Length: 293
Image (cartoon, rainbow, N blue to C red; front, side, top):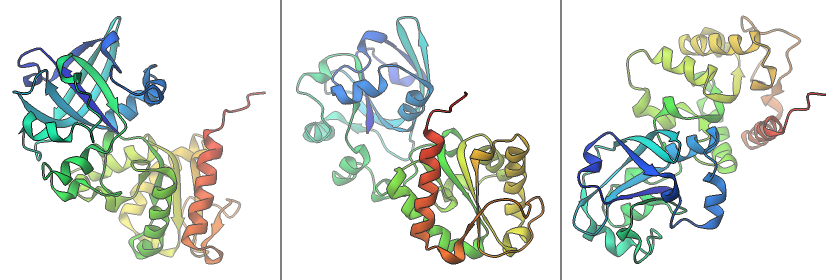
C-alpha cells in the first residue's frame, strides 16, 4: 500500500509539514481501504506512517518525490502531517509516472484535485519495474520505515551462533504475519549501523514490540548484545507483562535472571516452522480482547 498526496499549493513540498482538510482525506480510495483508516486510531496512524508516499502536485509539470509521513495530527476539521523525503530516490517528472497511472490506481482526473488517497498497490515494485528506483527497494525483507518508529508484533532476541535456526523462524513469521511486523536484526542492517545502538535496541524490545521471543542457550548467557537485550526483557518481566515474553530453549543452560519454573518451548523437539507457528499462536492470543471479569 502507499499514500498518494496531491496538492495545488505551489512549493508545498518544499516545507516539512502540510495540512489537509479532513474532507479531502481518503478521496479516490477504495471502500475497503477507507474502512480501515477513516478513524485515525493509534494503530491506523502507525500503519499510514509505514506506507511509502508519493508527494505530487496537481497537473503534470512539477516533480514527484518519494518519502514517508513521520507524524499525523488531527486538528478539528484538518489533518496536519509532517514528512521527509527518501533522499536516495531522485525526484522524477510526472511524465515518467503517467504511464504507470493504471498500475498505481491513479484515476484519470485524480491529479486535478488536492487530496490524500491511500492505494492498495505496491509502490516500490511498480517504480522499480519502471527503473525509477533500484531493485533494493523490492522484496519481503525491505524495511518499510524507520526502525525506531515501527511497532512490531514480534521481536527476536538470540545469540549469533543460532542465527541459521532463527533466520528460518523469522522467514516463516514474516510470511504469516506480514512485512514490517517482525524485528529480526538482519532486516535492518543499515539502520542498526549507528552509535548508541544499545539505547535503540532497548527501546525496540521494551517499548516497540508486542511479543519478545527469547532464544535461550549457553551462548545467550555470554553474549554482550544478548545481555543488553536481556535487561529490557527482565524489565518487562518485572512489570508483570508475562504475555509479552515467550521463552524458547536450545539447551538447559542457566541464564541469569531466568528461573527453572519458567515455561519454555524445547527447540530440540520442534523445527523452525513449528516454532514459528507457536509464536503466531501467541501473537493471535495476545490480540484477543482481555476479559477483565
